[in-house]
Image (cartoon, rainbow, N blue to C red; front, side):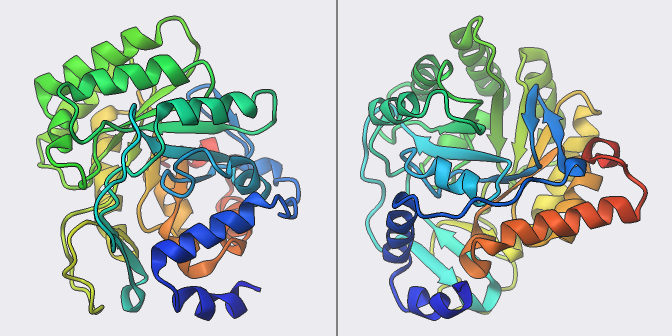
Length: 341
């Protein structure tokens, strides 16, 4: 069905197409995916994932369609990014399809309805099955951005399956500075304190655009500070060779061209963490082989987003089936056995 719908969706403005897709998902008329192959089950930071293929933040910013996405077969779903106060984000147009490159550039700027709305949505799904995490951002005009993350953790930690502190979006000026040394150490200390005794994993999402000495610094601060895992990585501000007319647009680049950089970033964090911290890989994953390569490179799980735009929801089942086949081909009895192997 997606093959027939794709030309129609691609004839629309990308943000309009995105919103129409969300509206369709909100009808609830999503057929349930079959049960997962047991070989795909994996534990990540105490979360028992039925499979390691997750939905990256950005699809349902306001906790709009997590249950529909779980029914598509995702092992976990990440909602957001959510900021304490509602904000409109950057002026439109702000999403660009790079069809010739199987890529997307976005400069959304944390457009969302705010933390209070997200909390209501999370409360409404309490008791339902499935792992749903929340991705936290900071308001563009916040005087103390770390305080924004503290507020997010305090509000959402008891309601979400996990919490991601997103300090790597390139579309909020200055946000990535929170990845640096003392700023990161202060942020980690404050959000861990805000979590208190709530037994919810706390992840930090990092950028792929890092200097060589950043990997050890971020890893050490995360490990020593009590972070439960890293999501590697966000979109890139770099521009590899691209063939699309919109290649020069400002924003974060995702999709196929991000794959090499995201893989190298994962490998560097695998080395820097030394197996002491679970890693969730994102960036350019569009196949079972791609997911398997990240797992072999040290990831415990993976996340998709841009590949869904180009391949449709059936991609989730294909990735899982191919991944299970690759694990068995190489003699692994589980995902865990293949991590970093």
